[in-house]
Amino acid sequence: MAVEIGTLRPTNHSHHSNPMMNNNLFNPNPNSNMNSSTSLSSGNFAAKFLPKGLIFSSFMPEIQMLELFLAILVFIVIHSLRQKKHQGLANWPIVGMLPSLIIGLQGDMYEWISNVICSQNGTFIFKGPWFTNLNCVVTSDPRNLEYLLKTKFSNFPKGEYFRATVKDLLGDGIFSADDEIWQKQRKTASLEFHSAKFRNLTTESLLELVHSRLLPVLEDSIKQSSHVDLQDVLLRLTTRKKELSLVSEHDKQRSDILTVFMGLKDENGQPFSDKFLRDICVNFILAGRDTSSVALSWFFWLLDKNPQVEEKIIEEICRIVSEREDDKDKESPKGLIFKPDEVKKMEYLQAALSEALRLYPSVPVDHKEVLEDDVFPDGTILKKGTKIVYAIYTMGRMEGIWGRDCRDYKPERWLRDGRFMSESAYKFTAFNGGPRLCLGKDFAYYQMKFAAASILYRYHVKVVEGHPVVPKMALTMYMKYGLQVKLFRRHESEIQKYFKIK
Picture (cartoon, rainbow, N blue to C red):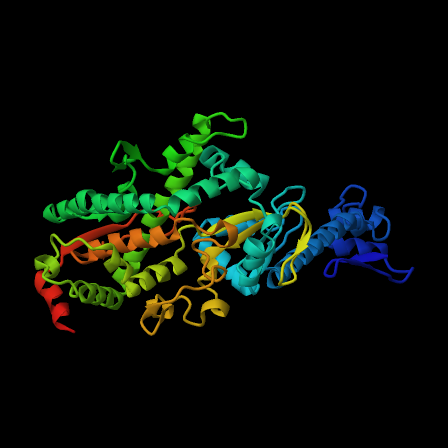
């Protein structure tokens, strides 16, 4: 037997072949007289002393194991990536979909999750690493939301996981509470929100906040020819808690949510603890201040990109103000204060604000937990303890809900014969739906319309060129870098132009 060097494999020769020829195959110098026992090249040694095939068979186990490992690895990669089409994300052994989530967090998380949900027709199941509790159902299907928020409301509480996550911030406040704690807060707040006394006080307070605090700050920025972070200004608008009072014939009495709860007792007949009162305050501040301020920030950013919408808003405001009788200030932006009935007539402005909320909801996602095994209307199986995320941000970007122009800023989609028409709470969920429908929805609209109209009637708001506008990952969808704007005073001649168009 000899070994062919070119092919590196053993070959059979005649038993009568010359041994020296075999040696010369391994020895480059055929004239060498060196004895094979004293001159052993590696090939000569292998040919003379190693059994047949041992040279390569000794390496075969390692080679075979490497090939097997690579084959398994390639199979896993292909299989995991192929699942992306059916499951929305690549699902890897052990780590599940976590790598895809980490990648998504590096960019615009809301756009990333929207693309995934839309590719799965409105619902997908996120699978976390093995032996963790990160599995959850993510949905934007209106049928599922109605089932979740109304039809089977009692089977989908906020849940322990959500409460534990936001405990330090929200405590036992209305946003995170369930069962009796939530019901008591909801009932008490509802009675106060719908009282004429509270509505009048909040309206008066809003007028003072806008005309005594907001507009002077904006006017100063014009005098100083400087730009201003409009989101920060709007957030600070109601930071300082004001004491509102009603003067009756006999005494003075304050009316606000905190005062109401301070006068109530717990189930043991004792006053509520300071911690519980603090939780209530934090929750209502987040609900009533941050959400409206953030919504207005996104609204003004969208107006800057869609000047034709701003023009229609100004035209509507001027038409409404022109109906005043014998009002010297109606054609002068300086001292004009909008009346409550005028604000309510601003239909196009409400449509423009609703469209901003559709595209950029103040609360982009919300959470629930499954109490008992259930099934969504779209067929998704829900096991007890499963976490559910409903993506409100994504709903505004689904063609199946809003049509092919779903990503366009188009206030007209909210109007029927010039009148504002609201949509189903399970299609437009910016104010939640079912028993947890936002108590302050009507006042939130009034607040945003009053502030927006007061600003737009006086100023052009232009976003500083090159300023990055992206959402921040938080319970409320703040702008990550704020909203840097420069304001320009609206000239009286521009206002008068709209008064003449009648």
